[in-house]
Image 1 (cartoon, rainbow, N blue to C red):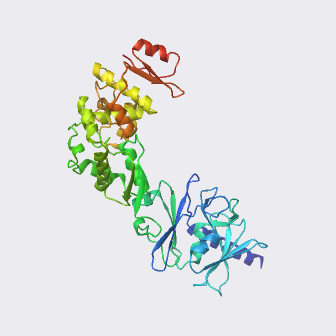
Image 2 (cartoon, rainbow, N blue to C red):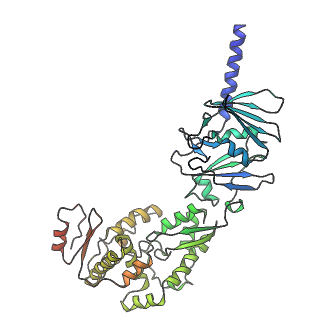
Image 3 (cartoon, rainbow, N blue to C red):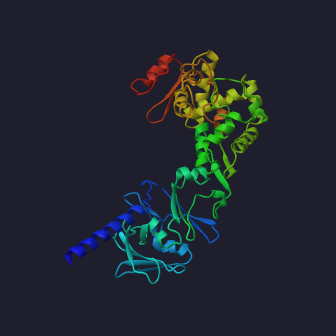
Amino acid sequence: MKRRSTILMAVLLVCITVTALFLPNIQADAASKKYGLMIANENGKYTFYDLNGTEGNAGMETAGNGSVMVPLWKMTKLMPGLTYKYNSKTKEAVVTNARNGKKIVFKKDSTYFTYYSSKKSKGVKKEMVYKMYISKKSSSVMVHMSTLRWVMNSAQGCKYYKTADMRKNGYDTSVYSGLLIYNPYNEVTGLVKATDVNNISKTVRVTIPEGYAVPQVFELLVSKGVCDSTEKLYEALYNYDFSYYPLVKAIPENEFRCFLLEGYLYPDTYEFYRLSKGQDVIGKFLRNAESKITDDIRLKAESLGYTVDEILTIASLIEKEAVDSKTMSNISSVIHNRLSKGMKLQLDATINYVERYVKPNINGDVNRYNAYYNTYKTGALPSGPICNPGINAIKAALNPAQTEYLYFYSDEKKEYHFSKDYEEHKANISGENVTEITP
């Protein structure tokens, strides 16, 4: 009798182990901000839910081991046919599918639950990736997201998608770091396009900050779901002919210019169709730039002896070096004064541009643009803008303060100091931990 009991116990342990092996270990980054939730109806149409709880409200959580946990009561309310009961005395939560008779019973602080395949079947003990617990935030019963698949028609009716798949299908990965999918009726075979999901808008509102470089703009657009990859945006940038826009047509040919339209993706708030074509997105930027770079701006640039492209280049330098409009005006004067004297600009922002935005985003010889953008090396303006400047920087480029300044630096308090000559500049920075601008 003792030998038989030992054998039965061994078989039971093997069954539990096998069950655990086939249970999806769905985990998320512990630092994740939010998760999206999608549930299919009988016709396979998905609806999106933002199930991210606030204090006192049930929402999805991340357990200590990175497991995605869901509030059981709220989940059953969202899925047709499921009922939920909690016994505070036994500390057991029961979920039943009225349509197929399946049932699961959870017990507080246990990593096991009991599964019933039908109303008449005997319960089978199964192991979870993480224990059932009561949320400290919302007092909700929390279980690992994969356990609900046991009451669905298909054991494959649950899946978790990370940002890589979300980006390809137009979901907002700037807000959501993961997407939890339930199909109570059939297997989840893939992630549908965001444009085919209820509660997800067909358009996307995106604000482009002043001073963003092309790679930053493209990354932001993809993270918002405007395009499904930065590759398609770069393909449009390099290969699509935008020369029917006067501003683009006027850009001088220069083999040492990295991103042709750097400086022309005007910073503003835009509304795009989700999963747009790259050329359509860039076209919207250019149409806005054409309207914002007015005839007055173009004429003022000409009166100063500069092209619009050169003014946008100066404006981009100002945008990255300055902190406010007053600083912009004085930095503009330094740039104009140095250019008029044939001095190198020697601005750190141009080095940062090459290192952070050019080199990581090109193939081949990554150093091929260094000498043409690094203003410690090139004797004039860089080959093109180093970011997409806002209107204040453009105005400053056109209206420099009337000074004799040739040098400036910012101290640890972000206060700017301007000098007329190198001796004064050296005296100003004496004792400061800054990079000198040599004469």
